[in-house]
Length: 320
Ligand code: SF4
Image (tube, rainbow, N blue to C red; front, side, top):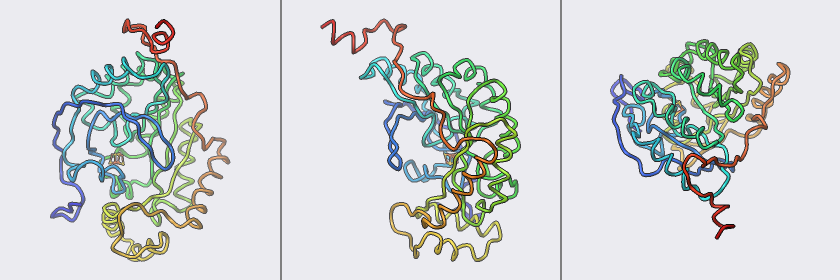
């Protein structure tokens, strides 16, 4: 991982570039959950210290953002020849924020969502966006029977947010946006992920987020503990230092049970500690009358190819 002269994991301003993609709709698998995902951008200017996606892309993940300028055309082509009559929920996006600032210039997420809607594909969006996703409120509202929008919010403490996610809007701004979507009848959730030991895991941190979720009209709130990986751990150490948590490094080693240097792969928090935090989150969510689950209306749908003039695979088999 590159740490720059300022001792940070990112530079001042991200550079935007365009590239062409051959394929945009991909299967993915995380911790036993598998599905489909699209990523209209590569890289992310939100610059979260804990970002899991950095490893898979490039060392310039935060500083050089690639816009896949033909993303919507490629997605359209892939769906037109999709090898089944049905399709499961598509994640928009799995390894970047689809509504990061680059979307203002390129509008690729909007175009891809329009393609998904054209083919009757269910989708869920993961984002930390406020103003930019609000531009698409009407687009998602008219498809609300078939989509779920999830904001990843780790803290409502602005001092902590500026250190651990320097490129995201304040949580208070995100909750204003969420309220607009819930008022419009769009099914929304908050993913409190990752919960960072010593930074966002205290009862008062968790309750402040859950309370804000309830006030924003949400029904679905869930979360997960931070997982560590060598490059993430280097950034977390910087964040702990900036937050003035002098003994944090040693305590992380206790919570996760590792010695430096961290070996390849992920390290999860010890079960006794993770259970304690997640149980606390889930009990707060229930106290505030919300659910820790995804909504149950999402699921596989029949692809609508009527506008393409193509015979479905199903029809083809039976006619043939
Ligand atoms: S918003 Fe997501 S993809 Fe972007 S830096 Fe943060 S964690 Fe990584």
